[in-house]
Image 1 (cartoon, rainbow, N blue to C red):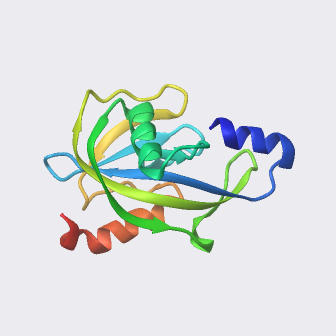
Image 2 (image 1 turned 180 degrees about the vertical axis):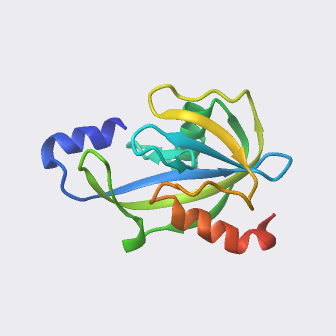
Length: 153
């Protein structure tokens, strides 16, 4: 998150529009990969903010690999999310309005390995038994995926 951290030195905690991507990763049992985040202790999707010069699909692939150790063989755009529902204030006070490209991935390789700086745990969940504490900026994405999943997968 180099670019955003550089901006924070100039603007402090005030709201930024933060563009990024996340990944809905499904295993062969159609379970959703979630990560327990260290910053807010909620479960969320692998993802993060865009660096200058990156495409959204590159952000999704990079963040998936950095946070989970998995490499996407194929990423399919699901939807772009933005608006008031994606406002978030981090536990340390920084505020953002997220603009997020969400990709779906079920074709991947590698071994699960959590990023030690950002992730406490990685776990696959049945779509019918998701954890209660889903990270606030990821909840609208997960909710929309669950609503549309039968027409997607």
